[in-house]
Length: 221
Image 1 (cartoon, rainbow, N blue to C red):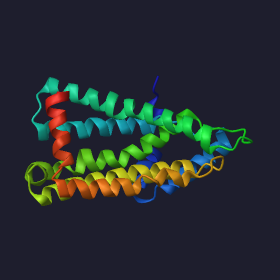
Image 2 (spheres, helix red, strand yellow; image 1 turned 120 degrees about the vertical axis):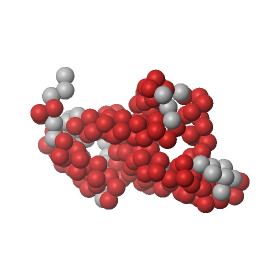
Image 3 (spheres, rainbow, N blue to C red; image 1 turned 90 degrees about the horizontal axis):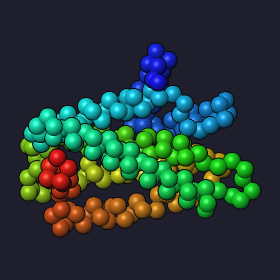
């Protein structure tokens, strides 16, 4: 049962802010938590509560932009929560948890990467893209991004490029802060592939944001 009076919402808000401006500071706190509480993962659900609130707020924005009716909005909200966030998060966290423990952790190391920490890393990395793609980008969608102009693709796809790079960088920081892991720099190896795909999308006329909006409107709701 959630006890809101015992949650540190101020600290959770501070974490969300620093995920944008100095994400490395978040993981310094994780190392401190490991020393004092013997775990890397969060033990205060305040971050999750604020995260859920942002999911609801940004989903309202999508409903306005896509002109969704009430039940369409509910379907969209449930899809964003249980598929985009939790579903993808569970798969991503499990993949990192398994691969890092099996191939990036020395065989002599007693400690391992906690699954809960892997899910925390996913949520940390997911938050800036959520705000960029599901909040700030909405202000430009109907007036600019939804058109077939080159500037529309440039702006929309650049939002996606920054969001994906944010996700990868924060994920890298999350695991590179663990001294029990080696070669975590390999997490950043897909960066050139992402940049090349971004350039190809501009040249070929692929508007990623417009394609996603059509998917949500015609497949999800």
